[in-house]
Amino acid sequence: MEIDSRQIRRLIRQGRSRERTFDRVLRRQGWLDPVGETIQKAVGAFYDSLGAPGKSLKDLMHGTTVLGHPLHPAITDLPIGAWSVGVLADWLFVTTGRVPAVAGDLGLAIGVAAAIVAAMTGYTDHHETVGHGRRAATVHGLTMTVVVVIELVSMGMRLWAPDMRTAAIVLATGAWLLAVVGGYVGGHLTFAMGTVVNHNAFFEGPMEFVRVGSREDFPEGEMKRVEAEGLPVVIMRREGLLHAIGAVCSHAGGPLQEGKLEGEVVTCPWHYSRFRFGDGKVVGGPATFDQPPLLVRERGGAVEVKLAHPLR
Ligand code: FES
Image (cartoon, rainbow, N blue to C red; front, side, top):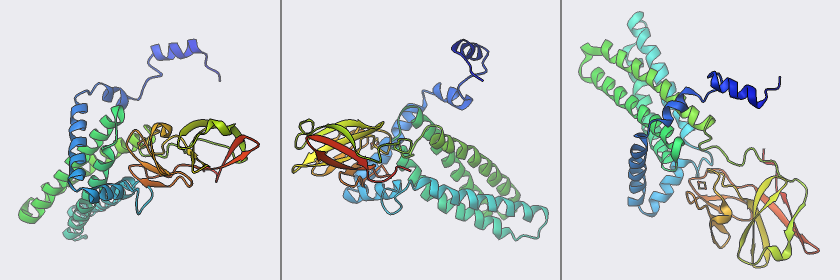
């Protein structure tokens, strides 16, 4: 069924075509901006204080090195899973007595340990968020931090006030429910707002050579942006040879042709991810995905490119 613009206006007037409630509410929470900024400054200062190892640790926490994929979403399953098992074991202990009390304690403790690593990776990713995404990331981070604090209180009660075990279990159950809410916000941040997703995932691009300019369009040592069958491409000439990679930064869509070129490495102007021309490899985070590499050839004064491999 086709809907024309008059119908769309009517739907909007009737309130049947509206922005998601979460986003509408979030847009009014201006107080989150200074909070998010303060968190970012603290995270940046922490990594800066470590010097060169701080940069390596930050890349590790993003997932740029070792995993080659965003680390935070991979780790968050651990605390959520452990706490879910812990809450189940707690209530089986309370209602049936057939599960030992220590099973719930163990689930909670494993969850807290994993949550601390998850928090480190999450606040590291938060460092590069902006605007509406930063507000959502701040809500997500603060919610999960409150969850960890409640879980720690529950742990303390189990250890030092055993007669308050039932209250400790109720607290842990409340924290688990809050973690589900926080998890929803984290999912929204990724799936609806596109944070930490590969920003080249939805491009197509040429699998056969297509013309993108003439030899004289690409002088030595300069980067130039062109389009190849809808794919933005940045081309640069070094020692006479042309190299090309996707121009849209995989991290958050920054324009690489406006970045800084040092040798064969370009630094994104937005959050300073670094990529190698030639193979598109990410050599410095926060990006975790490589740039699409392209093959370049010069034929009869024309410059042609094609993707080195399909984008998906
Ligand atoms: S857009 Fe974030 S590093 Fe390029």
